[in-house]
Image 1 (cartoon, one colour):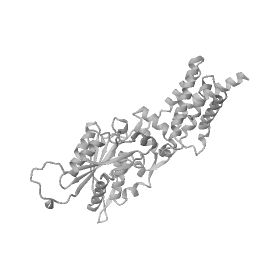
Image 2 (cartoon, rainbow, N blue to C red):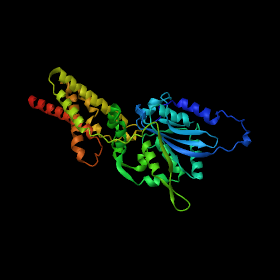
Image 3 (cartoon, rainbow, N blue to C red):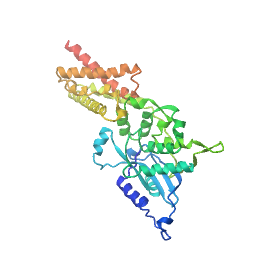
Image 4 (cartoon, rainbow, N blue to C red):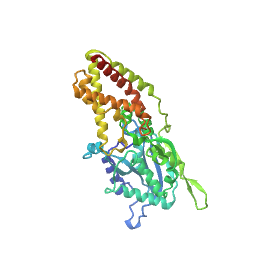
Length: 400
């Protein structure tokens, strides 16, 4: 969702084009006392379609403000810097810092179009007071001392920043119109739909998200997705002095091709089950080959469990209470020797506990408290888990 361009380039561009006013003038520059006060004359919501790079899969947006001196400034909240000190550590802990920058709007817009991304521009018809309030808030936010903010993918991202700025300028109208309505969709629904074209991102995100992202969210919350904000803004009407109403968006156009239409979530449970059945068949192989596959499976499941458990101790709230920990617990690491048929008492105990938790993940799914949307992982893991449980029971029977 964030822009892939460098924050350093954006900062330099902002300083050059905004605060120094570096446009070449045809007429002599008037004295400072003769210059008209800088004032916003219009504002556009700019929404970029999803891009090809993984962090662009969710789209992006910004607010473009046009001023009475001819400048057009893009207020963009989606900048991060891989070279930032402690970036990786903050990312792992869920404490990423993003930046808001003021950029030359034409260059910012051209950057998205050069990437082959369609751009939707919606001219917002605001009253003079609302426009002044929005402009003042945006200019304040991009000041160096205010530009950084604590990023949250769902609740405080580039799109929610734009949403909140528009809502504040309209006196809370956008929130009043959308906070009490819901389509029954969840954060996970939007996330999965956006990541389907990138299989590794789809699998990793789906695996790592926990119960908090599965509750139905309101139309207000849906606007963490830039395209949803554009749609809701396009439906908004304002009241006039005569008691009538008029649309907030007075012009809506798309540059750089057709605007992408939302897709449908694919029904893939059959593929997940097919892979699970194939995995179970491989686990049943005799001899050393089967032992290696079983031990490698335990290693993989245990490492996944360590990652999921580690996320529980970070600020990644969306990864909390993850039911996939029942399927892929760190206990699988203890069971590796037993899976390789060389385990002692500890390894056998680890295997029994790991299998017990995985089976509980299926059996207890009938309880309302286990409401996570993780059926794909159940289809995938149940065949190999049942195969291992059957194999362990058979071996016990033979030893008896």
